[in-house]
Length: 115
Length: 108
Image 1 (cartoon, chains in turn blue, brown):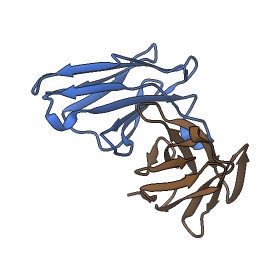
Image 2 (cartoon, rainbow over the protein chains, first blue to last red; image 1 turned 90 degrees about the vertical axis):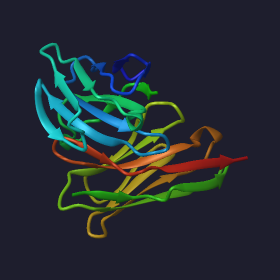
Image 3 (cartoon, chains in turn yellow, purple; image 1 turned 45 degrees about the vertical axis):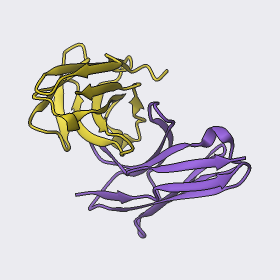
Image 4 (cartoon, each protein chain N blue to C red; image 1 turned 135 degrees about the vertical axis):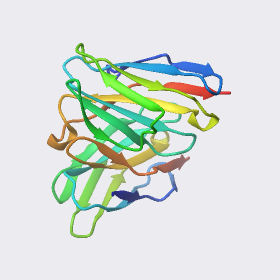
């Protein structure tokens, strides 16, 4: 158990719908990262927050948005869902940024299936 | 941008040694990390190289050569439980960018 909690674990929804994925980082971690992993694919970096501020953005679609709240939990909002958005979405956290050698700890992921 | 290349699959037998290579292209980075992911599971941290050279952690070692834009993960005394996907990742100031991963299959 990494200490990073993600909900829901599984989610099935229809095309065109909107979902919110939630992440609680490890206690004391200020950085939160979101990654997308499609079937048999690598981990695609979406976005990173540090203490409530967006610090880095990767290949995140305009239909997707995220935020980190004052209590440091984060939410990833996915809207106008398409079949291709079906994937495993990981949240990860670290004490600070990764540049100081801080280990990034991953949650168990949220499986999203769009039908 | 940044890019990383790893072999897609590697197969080895139990007890053997296997090396998973990672080549990268980037204008700058802080270090190279390695993560392990079992099917359906979360990636877990294995090793990090901030400097050139070899880092050893038990049966796993990782190497980085910045001049060659190259790194590798060395797994010794392979066990069946080592069958998993292994990802190298470039560590930047605020994010980590992962390669596509190498699926390691350990056979008896």
